[in-house]
Image 1 (cartoon, chains in turn cyan, yellow, orange, red):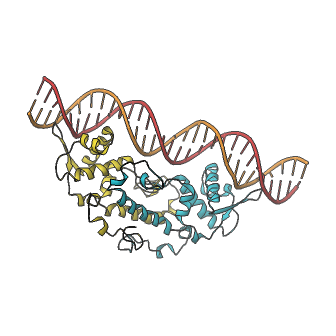
Image 2 (cartoon, chains in turn blue, yellow, red, green; image 1 turned 90 degrees about the vertical axis):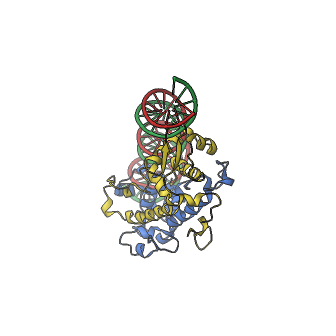
Image 3 (cartoon, each protein chain N blue to C red; image 1 turned 180 degrees about the horizontal axis):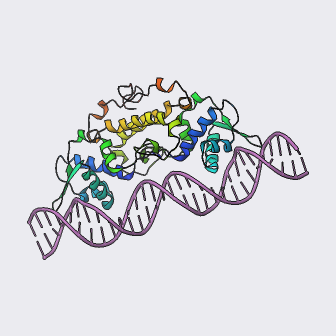
Length: 151
Length: 151
DNA sequence: TTCAAATAGGATAACAATAGTCTTATTTTA
DNA sequence: TAAAATAAGACTATTGTTATCCTATTTGAA
């Protein structure tokens, strides 16, 4: 419950790995080997990230992937949205969902919506830049737990 | 991904329903019928809530359930912890987890931990009181998103 | 031209987690 | 003693996730 999928984990790990390569093209094989991930599954993930403009691909014998944007322009939400359809804590918060017929007099939906927006915010505020080794921006971001403007 | 389980949904719905009864004992049958939930599945949920001290049960012919604490003393985290084992966005944040051998030089774990703590906070701050009909406390809680009243 | 190494992508299998059902035992009151 | 309730274990069904397999296509170099 409330867990990130492997797909998203793979996506974040791979994007982070590519980011450490500073513009070099990196093959799926290299990422899979270095990060000890399943090559096939990783490939699917990379293809989805490519389709969503997070990374760009080069086919052919010396092909591979590189970032389409700088690491500080790629949020975890960007990656999550590329890889997952349903990302709400309850179905009735997903756009177009009509699975619940009690929506109108439900006293839970609004409170859940508030929580949802704040969770979305957490993943939007964090970028690949924050995940890079020796990064000094992570703890200067407003990620403290108590007494924060939004928390 | 990142979804609440039905068990937790049932738990929250049931606790909220019981709370509207102001100390009366309520049977699982009544809750199941009124909220249109599976009786068997709801029973399991209620039993777990009972074991964890959220509600108390009375067996026998006029038995049922009532809250053990006042609605504003029951947080969503209390309910979630009663009903789910693993509630972290990645496994390596669960207490005692050793599934990942790269933990020590992982640049993702700390950032994820920060997000995890903030998510935990969201569910801890919200209580059953906030979910009650005509509740006037929900929007006085600091649940604003980015300067907007309710998001 | 041909081969090797890479991405692209569909199909499907294996696995795990979630959700739901069934059955029986126990408790309590009338 | 019967009825109505909770307690709880076992089991089944369903769904979602994860992984694998296979083939096609692209590209560059020998």
